[in-house]
Amino acid sequence: MSQIFDWIFSQYQETPTNLVILELIAIVFGFLTVIYSKRENILVFPTGMVQTGIFVYILFVYGLLGDMVINAYYFIVSIIGWYLWTRKVDDSHYIPITKTTTKEKLWSVLLFVGTLIFVTIMYLLADRFDVWTDYVDTLTTAIFFVGMWLMAKKKLENWVYWIVGDIITVPLYWYKGLIFTSLQFFVFTIIAIYGFKAWKKNLNKSPQTLLK
Image (cartoon, rainbow, N blue to C red; front, side, top):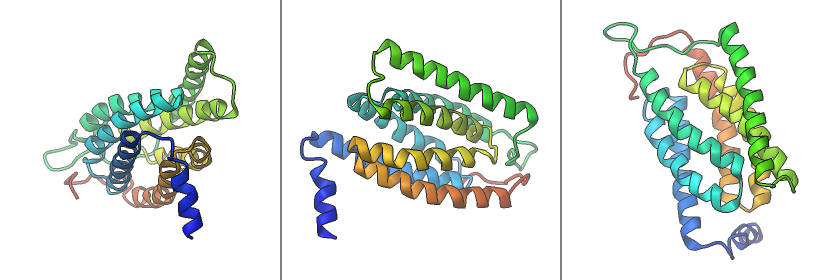
């Protein structure tokens, strides 16, 4: 076991201390974000904004342009989701969890394809398609774009995108040397599965509080 920990920490030998600290802080807020999302708690958005704000800087340093853009996108969509989740259907109930409509499924596909094209162009302009991680980063960016949009709209299917994206991201971040973040996404995958089950159980039920 000690050899595993020695190997993990050895990946950070040449990493500036401030980046390691920022990564750990972002991980803590990342866990809070997923847990609050599973609970259908409005605090998912402010905690998520702290996490994504930190990761925009970290991913810029590590050169993961796609994930950097998506974290900036998360920050913006979190503001929109914060507003949408607090809308009321009556005096004592907030909007419920629902499934995506046919129109929303179409928009999901268009958003996915549009994101792939956008990130691909961004990488080409930066002349960055030189390693396999760039292609994987483009794919996960598109997946997470759709997942975040559906979460903001409180759609059950958002968890499917998070699960798929998390599974792909684990080896990507491990390979890039962000070991703690890779382990975080592994745990995220497990929580996302339980999140899907919890949201499915509360499908079409309007909550009376968003702080639970």
